[in-house]
Amino acid sequence: MTNEQRADEARHTLQHFKSLGDHDDCVETLAIDLMADILHLLEQEGFDHARVLRTAEGHFHAEREEALK
Image 1: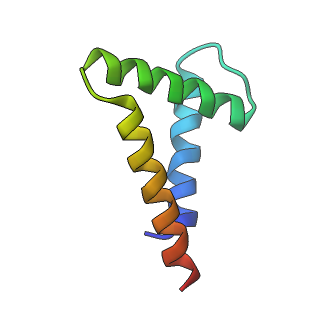
Image 2: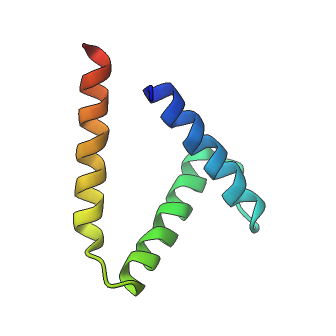
């Protein structure tokens, strides 16, 4: 999967999230709201949200590096 495909999947996810409630049209605001909701879910499920964020950011950087090769 390319980073463009990953971004498209995220864009579709944000569009679906927007359709679920009264959300702003701004991609950045939608992403912040969805990420905050995911953090609440992780906390409720007993996961370490800081570890999840660190791991996700690590994946992001690795995928970016891979695309530059």
